[in-house]
Image 1 (cartoon, rainbow, N blue to C red):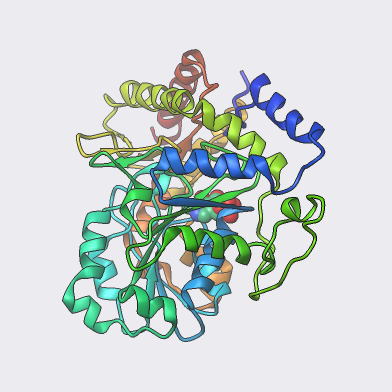
Image 2: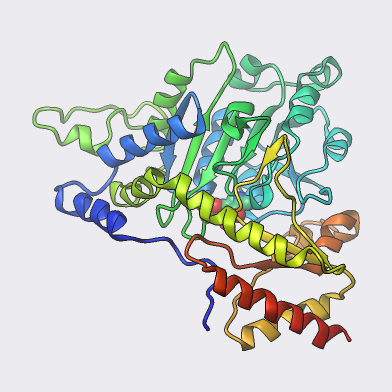
Length: 403
Ligand SMILES: Cc1ncc(COP(=O)(O)O)c(C=O)c1O
């Protein structure tokens, strides 16, 4: 039985929607993007949504909009994909990495310790789809003590009057905290629609806006749209309508727009997202039920009364196990054609960040998690039979490697 790690979900309905775009005479940003933005806005309960061509572009754009620059600091978890920190570096600012908690989300106590007068934003990551402790993070940035330390250096920073919370929601479409979506909780949350994500446009991202007053999210939507199109006042679709050729360039923008072909894919998936999510939940719960009796299997965060995950990853941890044994287990499963993964190698262990002076010794929970983590395949198409096969071999592999 060959089990891939994370194949995209493609059915006839999705193919039809992409074909519709291909045959429509318009393939880049146009009606499909507008429909996807509207659909996501409704699903996420955001005030407005701008689609872009990746999470990374969305984060770069929002940090630039906030006026983050050299000399500034942005707090990120050490345990995430490198893009979270790279977007900060792209702005010329310094990513301040902090450790995580056992649920793999950022440790809010560590955020508090890391805040300085240079801090302009925090990018918490809903790792695997588990919402961060946003209540505490919001309370923290809105507290008088932290607000007093805030030193705004751009118009948008002055208007906000506090550290901005930009959620890295690359994994968490559909997750909830006290019945609220992440987009409802924070200033801005950014989704990734990359090929392995719960909802995909092959490559893509979505900026979910929820800026507090006095910001006008409708105006902000228009501003971001222009910034994502080289600062151009009209997108190509509008410009090609007969007689509508004239445009202006009003800002130093970027070329981050999402093409309609990509939006079509995600649009068709979004229509059945509740089903896709429930199938992920089935896989997640079946793993948990099969593994819960094994003392060595540390299950990932389960749903509670307050919180639901989006079941993006199944980050199992194994205890006791060494990093070498974990690697052997991955190879044991790979020899049986079962693809697993590790989420993540903490950023301070990667060459780029090591060369910048980050040290893994400063992030003990991230390191400990990494050495014992193995992500099991999770996607709607995975059958119960396949799940049972994966778990059976995982158990056999564990005992053959550790005994
Ligand atoms: C946590 C996290 N943040 C950011 C990204 C970057 O997303 P994108 O590839 O859409 O730029 C990813 C993608 O893997 C991710 O997993």
